Image (cartoon, rainbow, N blue to C red; front, side):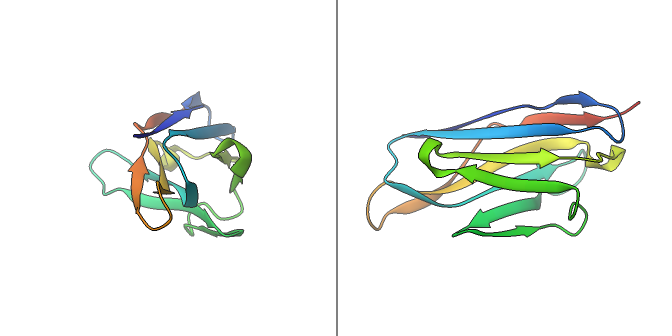
Length: 119
């Protein structure tokens, strides 16, 4: 089995920063894409940022404020969030496209971590 464990969420004032981490463990052959989604109350889950093969993509709403990075040796993905706004308030989920063998793969999700931006 594969587990994704997130950490780093919390309460921060507008303009502040937070760094989220997500570590994958278990029966892992290799990991392809890793990324972050978020879901605010009453809204659909949306892509925040994703990294694959050295390339990165961001939602327009977070470009120039958020940075995604990963440590392949640790099977860990990070999301550095700067200049946070109240509209960034959501539960943040990490996702990883995990290969458990040479050809078999699926997406695994973390349990989510709450980020609240409020004064």
